[in-house]
Image (cartoon, rainbow, N blue to C red; front, side):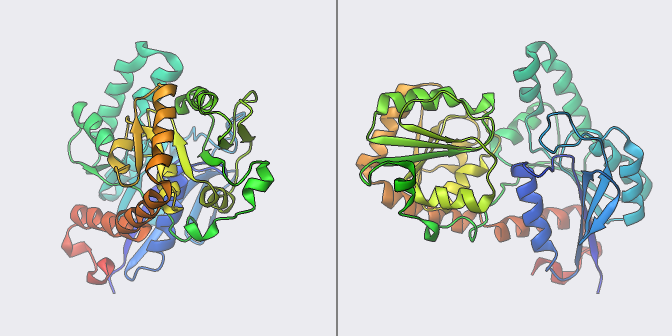
Length: 374
């Protein structure tokens, strides 16, 4: 049987990393059992090693980087790709590993797909100011213009790339693990752990406490809602000073832990207005709870009126009103609709089969085993 060898390469992979690692791990597991496909994953590590098709390539650790490593030398990555000789390479970040993949493309004469997971101009302007935006946009346009096909997790991200002159851009949503995140994990004992009664509406936010998550909006919202509502903040870099109706778990929690908390809450609350996709939204919906989020970024594409409510960005009063409306209109029914919605559209099996369509289109039928699409 003809075997198609796909290699993913990224520096966005660390013990506490988020959506990109979730995507790559889910993809690696599913491609590993597809007939006619071999999948290799190249990620940064302390030394050169391989286990179950995952190759670590030496890269120095970032100070205070929570396990992230930043590759400084292109050659080791290019050399591993040359040794593996994949039929297709997918790039998961816009840094040195992307250029290593393009080097390998020229040497091996294979197609390279770029997945635009992060809005690089926006990230840089948030940290350094708008004075660098033009240069970063030019860099993104140049880099992604070299790929045979570009994937973006949402329409809003695809439109930004198209606006920069990038060709062959396709929307490819991410997915959610429907087994890990499911309503069956609901634990009626969580309220007692938090010291709240059963009539209190329990909200949750999970993720990093970074600036773009707009956590002050959530805290202001909770102050307005009062003691009949309680918010659980879960993740690293969370604020230390919060209203009385907010509980903080200031630590990175494994997915299984977050899944129990999600299923035991009544709704997810999210004020981030710069999300490129919003994986945590899908995780909440898969857990059988509805969402109150802002009408910005990719949220407008994944939160339907059957799954939750969207409100004006950066407006704590509007968010508080949306939360009250959610519980007035029946949050449990919306939660069931949310679960059904992700089952239909966002299972990882659906996502991986869609990815195979992109790979097939780039490689052409003569390089593709018929069994691979099954």
